[in-house]
Image (tube, rainbow, N blue to C red; front, side):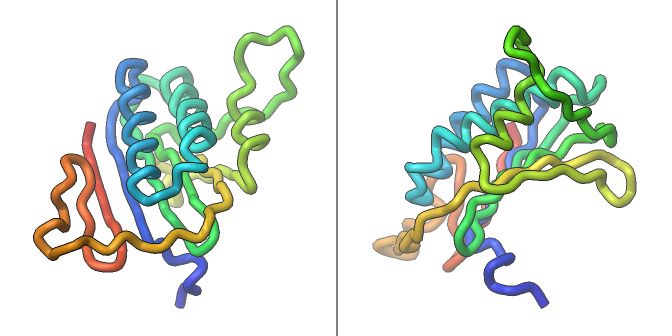
Length: 167
C-alpha cells in the first residue's frame, strides 16, 4: 500500500521526440501546467531542469529521441521525470570552469531537493528525475461541472488531475 505522500494528487505526461523545436514547446507546456496547478514559484526551476534533461536526450539518446516528461505533484513536492528509450545511464563527471557543455546533471542536482536515475526493469530505457519542494496548494474547484476539461491541453478529473498530451 502506497502512503499518501507517495501518491500523486496531480499528474501530467507529455510524449514527444526530443528535437530542438519540440523542447521549447514542452518547456512552455510544463510552465503552463504548473501555473494551472497554482505552482507559479516552481515554474522557472522546473523549466530549467526539464530543458537540461531534454537536451541530454537530444544529444545522447541515440537515434530514437522519443521520450516522456511526467509531472507528479506529491504531498509536499513536485517530481519531474524524463523517460527515454536508451538504457545507458549518463556518466557523471566534474565539469571544468572552461567547459561549455556537460553541466546539465550538475545543474539539475543544484536546483533540486533530490534527483536520481534508473534503468527500466526490462532494459527498454531509463528515467532521470528530480524533485522540487511544493508549497501547499488548495485544489481549484470549478464553478460548474461543465467547466471540467475545457482547457485545450489539460483536463481535470474529480479531485485529482490527470493529463496526457502528445506533441
